[in-house]
Structures are given as C-alpha cells and as structure tokens.
Image (cartoon, rainbow, N blue to C red; front, side, top):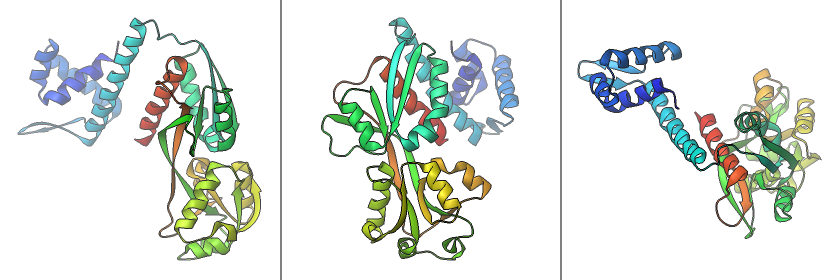
Length: 301
C-alpha cells in the first residue's frame, strides 16, 4: 500500500488542522503530530507554518502535497491494474527514438522503467526523425519518440517534454567574447549542423527564418548525425553549433562550451511520443507512455 505517513500528511494538508485530520484518519492527534515531525526531519524542512490563525503549508509543504496527490493517483491506477491482472507486465517493447532523446534523455529513464517492469524486454533503436517515422509506418517498432511528426495522418503524436536548443561556441570563440550578439552575427559565423532530416536541424532552421536569417545562407562548414561529434568540433573552435540543452549538461558545467545568447532568438521544441492512429495504447506500450508522462513531470520540478 502507499506510504501511510505521506497519506497522513495529505489529510493534514487538506484539513490544515491536526485534530480534524486525526478524526478523519481515526488516529490520535499526537500520532498525526509525530508523523508530520518525522517527515519534516526526513526532508530537513518545515512543511507547515504554525500561525495564530492556524496552520499553513510552507513552499516545501505545497511541493510535497502536489507530489503526494500524484503518487496516490498512480498508486490507485496500479491497484486497478493489479485487480485486472495487468500489473505484472511482460513481453517486448520496441522503441525508435531520435538521436537526442535516445542519447541524453532515455538512458536514465529506461533504467527506472525496467526496475518497475523487469519482465519487459526493451529494444531501443536510434535514428533521425525520418527514420523513426519510417520504422513506425513499417510496424517495425511499437512507438517512436521524436522532436516532431510532420503531416502524417497515419500517426498521432503527444508531447511529453519541453526542450530548448541553444547556439554554443568554445569560450575563446570571437562571438563568445562579444558583449551583444544579433542573429546576423550567428548567420555569418562558420557553423556545424546536424544532418538534413534531423528534427534538431529542422527546428533550428525554422527559428532562424523567424529571426529573418535565411538558413540557406548559413556558413556551414560541417554536418554530422552525431551530437557528440558536433560538440567536439565546436570545442575545438571550428565554429558555432546548435544543440539541445539535454546534450550539453556536462560541457556547460565544465565551461568547455558557452551558450551564445541572442535577444529575440529562442529555439524551443516539444519532444513527442508517436504512435499509430487508433485507440489509446494498452499493455506494455501503454504502460511506457504513462511512465514517460510521469517521468517528465517529475523532471520539471
């Protein structure tokens, strides 16, 4: 069953009165107080403000309350699956994911999914957006994860994550030292881009057009299907690169790459789970879609 101490906290947070919470839970008021005290010690933060007018949730308390509501809803859904004989998932799940998602987002998430469903055999294939869609249309995979979908009536897409693409350069690059940059500065600089057909490149070119930069006039010195290759080239000073923040966590932290901020140029995209048209996915595929949505919500916090 769900963590009882968190359940006590939820009732206390809704009642904002430990005595009333105790009546609702059919336990003593000191027991409610002790449960809350132990939670506050565990998290190292006060969850309630004790004021003359009564109790009030702290910022940490509000965050925990939202988490508990979500966790109890997930637990209720799991109980339904158990009662329906669906909770013990087994079988195979074939996923095709675009490069950025497969390399920088899925590894830590897939590990958690397989801990929850150890009897599911997951096969992950990586490719650009066109290759992912091709695998879905040919029914070689159960679901796809891409930056976009395009005009595909046979498929449906649902956003599960918000991503940002940024222009980056080596710290010693001339643009990195310039106080104020414009889109024209980026357009004139040698750059390294993802290959044609990739979702990243499509989003970058669309954003540049909005900034009145013709992508056909970019000074492209190299193209690559690998974000790792692009990072290495940009670090060496070859030029400017356009990459997802997901791919840049370590480089930005170490200072081997810097973000080139251009006023008015914001490159964002949704990451989508893509499925064949039809009823909502059930079984292993449906469980993974639910897991993706929950993992994305947790990462936003």
